[in-house]
Length: 117
Image 1 (spheres, helix red, strand yellow):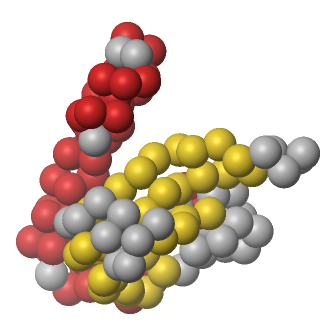
Image 2 (image 1 turned 90 degrees about the vertical axis):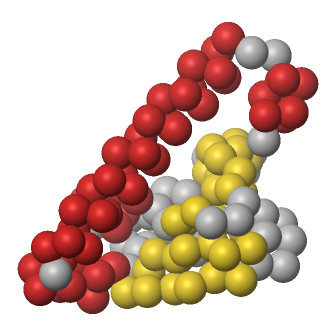
């Protein structure tokens, strides 16, 4: 998944390691997150707000992904309310993990953050 367009795909990462990063105007890359087995990956803001994607997702190892069309997933929510509830719970877990990572980023040295990964 690359920056510069409105994204329509989301993936569930079964195996492998990916990095999500963005690039500044000078071409310098900034890592946003590294993910490994059993995670959803995708440019959340682009998918949900229908804005131009600003992040790139790169496979750092061989990865097995299940890729789906985000609009199709949304259409299933109306048909299967339990699926929407499941997605909400996944989102809650994601944001809790994101908050934990942000706190660790400020409070822990890089070596400890790496060991946690």
